[in-house]
Image 1 (cartoon, rainbow, N blue to C red):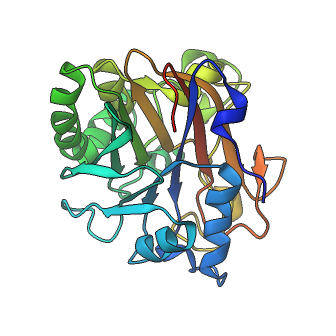
Image 2 (image 1 turned 30 degrees about the vertical axis):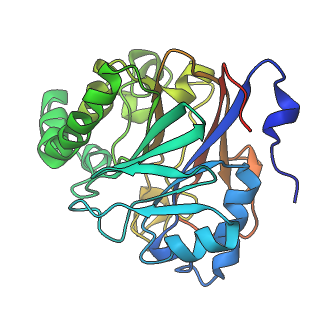
Length: 297
């Protein structure tokens, strides 16, 4: 299988590809072999992968792909979040790892799988809230403390000027997507919602990597939830009731990091840039390629 080659694509720097992928209950829940989940990672050409819902299959996947592996054990992520990497892991944290890219060149990768319920887009669909402020308050109550803990761990590394990546299934849309512009064209129930998790991440100085590449949320919605609506796999029971959205993210910060491509991996070309059939998860994956200003080995 052809994957991205760092050395071939940029001679004046290096490319680093990072994939955020919720694999759905270990990657085999839809009756497909684990090799199909590995195929998604291969198709993405990922150097680093943040997995959610690995349920014990992170290390088997890493072994198949010849990658290093660290399982995040901080509550409530046990058996959910893991980082896979072709680079050695020189330090581990509550929510991630520090990678040795080359001698003297490092990067920190943090992973999250935030609480999925209550899921506010469904509540918006059902008319649970009368004011946007209620949506935001409910989302903050659901996930606020979880994202605060991760950002507190990230903060010292950002202060040092380290390259930092934050990835995972946030189970919450982005304020960069539910905008006045998207509401004006009829998206997202015609509502502008300043979703708190994405707002907090951006407030630290991190950047939404996909939106840096595709800044128009109307032209590039980049939906990751969900390719299997109405099948009872964590989503709506009825296809017509499903709320499609972007809830899987890659964020980045660091002076020499520049995202140069961002793609969705999924079940068909209508919804995805890169296709794997049959697709093994209820989340499409997002892969971002970054140009760095030094040469990787």
